[in-house]
Length: 456
Image 1: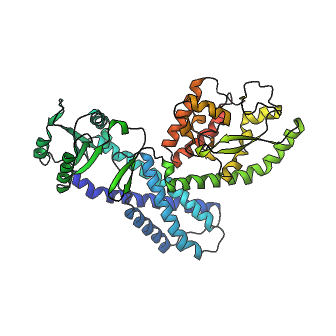
Image 2 (image 1 turned 135 degrees about the horizontal axis):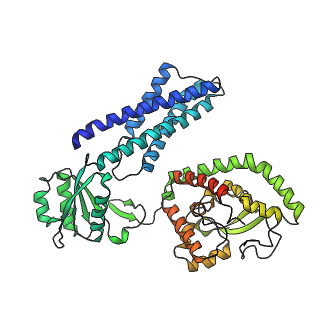
Image 3 (image 1 turned 45 degrees about the vertical axis):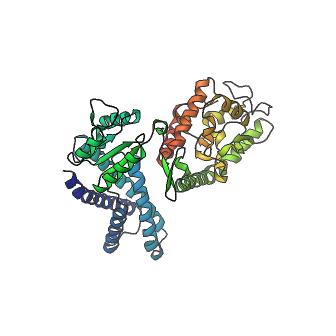
């Protein structure tokens, strides 16, 4: 059953992929044709589209859906393939089109492809997980060396049946339990009889034993994975660096250490903030500026020093919402704060006072999504009181963030509020993805509409 699955599944996946591609192209062309005179793909060009996608999908091995990967990984792989596809199509199609609608056509194609192919691939991912959960397409696995980390892995494999990994027991020279099949010597005798696919090695085993196991596994085409010691079982993804023939584990690496991820996030920030600046701030700043000036003396903007990436101080922009005072940096705004002006109360309640920060995003001091920056005096206090507080400065601060959409915004009244903020910021930094950013953007809009109680 295992071998037969690997023979047929890639072909079934590719056929489904092509059908989803057909639907996406047809829906996009039909929609554009309904709204105006847009170019329609000819037969040869349509066939070329299909062939280009087929080649990209096969070369990138999109049909390989990892046993332990989640849906996000499937969408990320699709996004990469789609970028390659659009790049190739742009090079070989756009130069030969002169009509002004060609860009709109290409963008609509991209959106339609991502929607329909995304639905198909996530659906295929879900079906495959259910298939494995029922006991099909499984891999036989054992753990060599018992310990706390080994027990935890065995428990996870028992719970997550959708991984399709059939845990058969332990082999260990010292420890024993009802799942122990024998010592390491017995392992060599039984490995081929039980049709083993995966070996998990507890890293506490001595070097020679580990080397012998790896040599045995390579000779018999068995995959080997090492279980890190308990101190490395952290809530993050570990990666490795190679120094010639020597490897080290990168313990505190984060997703945004990756060049491509940083480029992706920065590109999103530039495009988003540029659109806001051109289409909103261009008229909002003059109108709000006049209203602020009419009510009270002082500048239109409130410029405050805050800590950014790597704790570097930058000047954060806001619309001035208070009468000029000497406590702006050290004293938070509270409910019914007498310093807040009438127009300031409206700006705070609607979060419009934060809008100038899109200029901070544009120049690179901030990001659209990230940990909210605190004032320099507040930072000095919090970093001495809150564990891992300084870790939130690993990336650029944001206009909104995970903590804000989870309800932790506005005045900090209790210690648990700042601790909760830091925990959520830490989770965001360790688990960043472009999909998480888009989700936070959507939830921010919903939060602004539903919850205004903490905005004052």
